[in-house]
Length: 317
Image 1 (tube, helix red, strand yellow):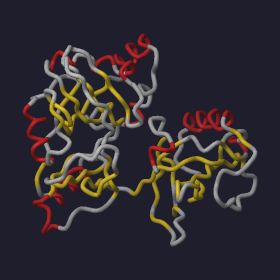
Image 2 (cartoon, rainbow, N blue to C red):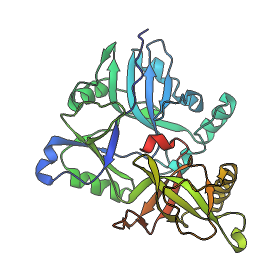
Image 3 (cartoon, rainbow, N blue to C red):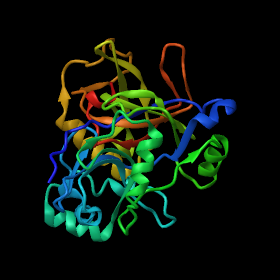
Image 4 (tube, rainbow, N blue to C red):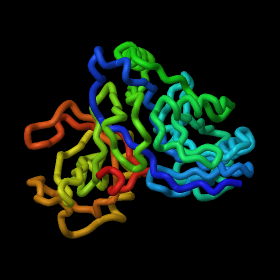
């Protein structure tokens, strides 16, 4: 059994497709909509899964335990845990019912109802050898050489060049977008790198909830809007009010979380001029969709996309 080093995942930077003339220097992969996972396979048949924050999430996904025997050699791999809808597309809302489960019995029950699938896209350690200093092309070749394809895991293809076509294909298929990866890039643990660029079909931002405004009428006692911010120079900068995009279930869930996190003082650097605002500890992370930003950095026409229980505020700085 090989002792595997703990490696933080390399992160992609939001951006646009590389220029067409430069496409041949990049590989393109489908952007998955799930929970990032570093997969530790020490070679003794066991599997350890860690989230992007480093938390042990192995118990939540018992159906992935067989991967250790399937590979049969020590490795550390990078990937994304997803739940697939009826058309085979990753669906984060489905996956949320699986995330954070600490009870093995409950995780086993949920695995039958909403099975998880592990999408593998990088190898950072193999047979006792660190791979982070190798270029993407060599790491990718080693990963594909493992031939990891099974009922609960796969290694989808990457395409060199043809970025415009790859992005259009994902748009037509209803997928989130693509990740462009520079062929010569090394693996940078814990770094949000320009060598990996994520291109989504919609603009999104990870934000921190700092407050809320109660709703009215049938929404009495529930959030009518969330006040959100982003980490900026060590503080929390207010970037807007989000008042659409929730289902009734999500709104009720958020209401419970907001009550527990209530505080008296505004957590934003500058108190927004929002009447009736209530403040909360800046601990909840969410993802919002928006049209564009103002010159002051405020989000235009934001709508709630999803709560991110897999992320802590420090993960999005």
